[in-house]
Image: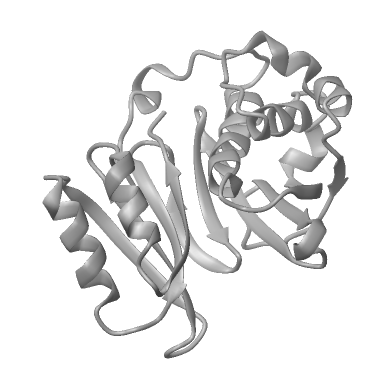
Length: 227
């Protein structure tokens, strides 16, 4: 896991808790960037597990996640009124408690985004945990293992599992002198759908991202900024 300044000095944040408030905002903020490339969200279900569920309302975990989903950062004073702001903006959010089992981190949230319009009936599920001091990890996206923390710039790529995919993507990144830190790929089964997370030492330029989206076997690309 990458080391960030959060490990040393902690986050600049609106309280009361780095794990339950700032961590919750960062989970929501990472999810915010992941879903940017998707069609209109009809409604969102936020499920809180463990200590998130037990003390979530008192520590503003619910407001923190909603704030992050709207693009707010941990030091944003609007966090306190995030749920009301979401309602006024027409954002439909339902918040519930859930038991994800003993293997789940105590500070875990499962976010389910349900699409509308032509994509009605489809959804995207993101699972993230606040692991202490405002540090977080998005552990799963649509049941694919991920390890997004916000400590590095990253790409999340939905694609078909075909030979040569990684070679094409890494060649594009090499053309803009972009250094790759890690690559993680998961797939349903051979030659089916897959998801790749690529962490980089600097942001992917717009023109490179545009070319990547035009690769025929790429379905969608989300660019996750470092924060």
